[in-house]
Amino acid sequence: MQRRQLLLGGAGLFVLAGCAGAGAMSGGAMSGDLSPQALAAEAAEARAVLPMQTPRAELLQPWTGPYDGTPPWDKVTPAKLREAMMEAIELARQDVAAVANNPAPPTFANTMAAQELWGQPLDRIVNIYSVMTGNIGGDEYDAVDTELSPILSGFFDEISFNDALFQRVKTVADNADAMGLNAQQKRLAERARDSFVRSGANLDAAGKAELGRINTALSNAFTRFGQKVVADENAWTVIPNEAGLAGLPDSNKAAAAAAARTRNVQGWAILNTRSAVDPFLTFADDRALRQQVWT
Image (tube, rainbow, N blue to C red; front, side, top):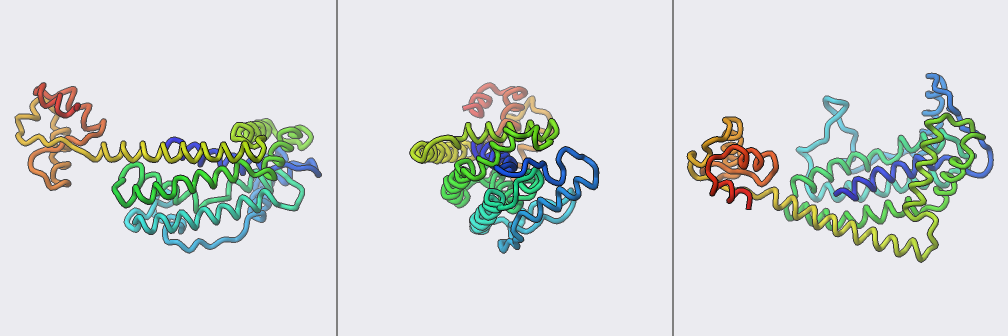
């Protein structure tokens, strides 16, 4: 899970960085100008770079509801999750290609600002994916996770190994002053260039292939480890008698009772999570039960 989050953050940075190339050394509509008019012009130029897309999968639709939209948890199933992820990766791949292969002279707006808009369906489904595989788990979600994890890893390697994108990043970082970029834009370009290099952009074909194999192996290893953690956290210890809860605050007793009801077990259930185990180890009077919960 950790590598997955790093990859997702890095992918956004990679495309965000695709903002310079040989040719006009212009920052584009923005060029360091933070006025509302310049920002609006930049946003319009950024939107024009990306292809118009209408996601088909149910889980890729824009979120609705409070807080500027919430995930449709009631509609999530392993099959729908897989379907949405595969479509979202393809949509994001189209966005990346549009930025990397844009024939127009590169500007801050038509490449870096465009990154802020690319891959929105993928962002949405990855958030859902991370929750379902990293917190819910189970055989069906584990199977989806095992299949999708190396696919995601391979997709983000596509981005980091995209030479056209890297060359644009390198150019904007190397020519930030000539392009009239402000300090924030310059720093972003430099960090993006460095991220590309650290992710293997300067390697030859054989080196990229080897790094890709290593990344996939790491992704698979992290996935297996994460699945074991989730399975372990889904276990619990049953406390059959209320006397075993002596010393616990009432709130923890109530939580243990609710956990038992949810799992259709008699008594009280101490879930194998930090929020349940730590209070029991701290407050429970029964040493033998504390040892049982710990082990």
